[in-house]
Image (cartoon, rainbow, N blue to C red; front, side, top):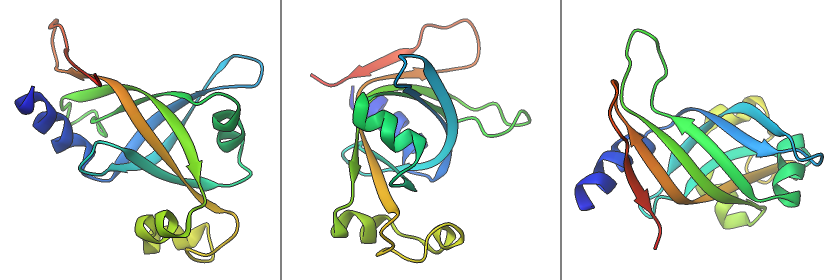
Length: 141
């Protein structure tokens, strides 16, 4: 398992475009792109508007699914399928720790009242490779 966790972290620890699926208030799936990065505990973070559709959906149903690892058809890397539970954080420490200058095109700064951080705690991650192979599966015990 340590080798699998390292392979997963090799993908998650780098900021990247990630597809993120939530569940609408009507119980339907909804997917959009977000830019994510994970910490050493494998918690995945991304920024959003506090009153966004995704934030409302997460407050209603915390289940989330993400796919990341391949950002170009020219570079088909290994990728991850992630199931987890998300929460919205407006905590000052979380917002300041996650802040970077690229967020400045959407928010006025880390203290912008519309800025929040979504924190996803994965409970199952499939490490997928190209080809007809079964994925390696990490799960939170």
